[in-house]
Length: 368
Image (cartoon, helix red, strand yellow):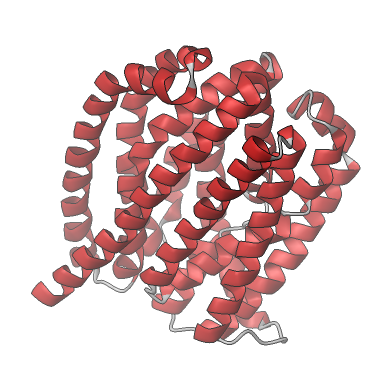
């Protein structure tokens, strides 16, 4: 038991250290984009770079969770799971990108108003890459290769920091330059991750039909849960863009990104917890979940208090006086962040036992 607990703590520390590195680097990148693009340009950039992630949630179909469940609970071949994930990403991502490109007039007129049309194609072309990256991270999580998982989380942020500094501060590339840089980084990192995963679980050419149906059956329930939860977390920025203007999105995006730094804690804990719960008895899973929930509330609660006092000073100092309007929404978001931290832990427990219907109801009620 002590060995298992020690490994859990070590894995959490490893993942959390990556989350801390991501946080520091992400703040640096956010400062560069905010100061270089201003509230209006920062708002457009936020909506554009979030678009593939937002749209991919309609095509994920719960495959990342199904990958962990298939490997850890069902004992499926990791190579077969990886191969199926690649096929799913290409087919689902490609179809979603095609549909969205055909409806680009509606997207540019209603969802990302004011965005240059030339930014849409590189952003939509990222859909298969974004899907594959999420699927492959599920495989890495299932194999408990958290060093790989951690490295994959940090590298894109380092590349984004360097890339945005060069393109925005040195080359003065503006919004289009920032979007193209982000697209290139996402594509590169996804290909790199596929090569790394191939070394752990060789990717084959043949799709495993029975396993694919099993993954879709399990993932279908997880899909509704993650879709509702993601819409709950992300759709607010597009609602503001639809009802107001990109400058208001820019202010709100800074508030959201700043407050969401606290979610690094439950994200690290939940990432390591999920595969362990999937392989544990029900009694042990409940006891472990309760213990991690108490730890999460304590850590995030202290962090929320610190943000409430430090945020009003830190946001204008880091992002500039033009973003002083981000302080009020950041303060409003903090209580919700504490509750969301608990959801991120509890939902792992239900998913690990194939009881996603509980998560679906909770996420659906929150969304409505």
